[in-house]
Image 1: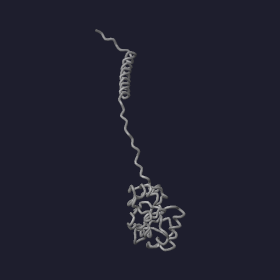
Image 2 (image 1 turned 30 degrees about the vertical axis):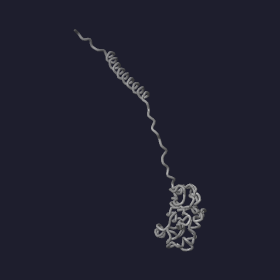
Image 3 (image 1 turned 180 degrees about the vertical axis):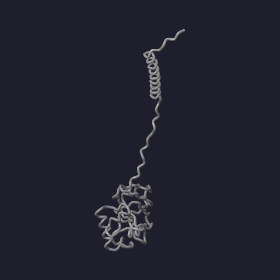
Image 4 (image 1 turned 60 degrees about the vertical axis):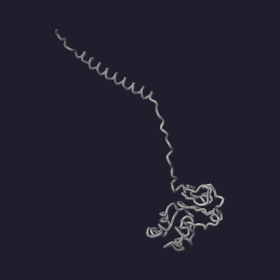
Length: 195
């Protein structure tokens, strides 16, 4: 038996046929994968909204305790007052003493507001001064600010003026924007004041 020599055209058809066969097999595999993927049921994954903690710059964190219906931690608007905190805490209980708290007082971030019962002695305000607790930079008057080390009448007046011109202090470090207060004075005040 004699063998006929292959011609270049026949060899091309053999290689082309092999390539066509491989591409056809690949196309069938992809098509089967797509059909199976489309037929497989998809289980929805519930997406819960991200927990949002209101930034301190846009809200006040206030701990309301005492004679209120729902004591707890609340986030209030930056210009909130004591009456707003009591309202979100469900209002006063029957034995709550509304005369013992200043309902019109502005609140400071991180403050604990305790509403006493009738007959209970009220807790000192947050701007009580060095002997009675930290001074709230957002509510303290010049006289209260003077109780702080390194703060005299002129510097106390500048702190109040800055607050009136620029709004509430967002952090204790904002004191650096007040003329006459540098890092050294701030270091002496850091543990004695709150915002």
